[in-house]
Image (cartoon, rainbow, N blue to C red):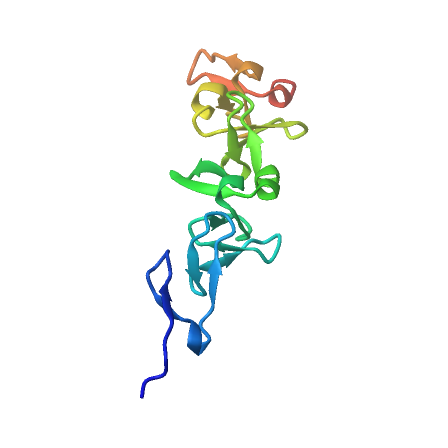
Length: 162
């Protein structure tokens, strides 16, 4: 004789959950769906249960957060989501366009003492490279020297004074 079954189905993946054999079922705190153990996600802040559609991991730290509390950002040509603490630590505004960009994808521009950060889209319009020392500098802060023989030079303040 078969053991009695009371089976309900996970609203996320459709897996049968047999309540009499000890399978666990949870209700998503946000949307109310019935969720099997494989689809249940715990939010990083507490023991609340959410379905995998209502929480997502932060791209940087991997912590689970409710989807609407993550900040989307296009990096490397892909949309990625960041929790607020990781977003604040990882993002910088571009000095030219003010668009928030992942700091590791920005060009560091300056004279060695003071630095500004530019997104890759603004670099061609805003940044020059000193032909003497190789520092990347804001195009408004360069001195262009035209040589009578050969190419013109683009020099930063430090190299002009040398």
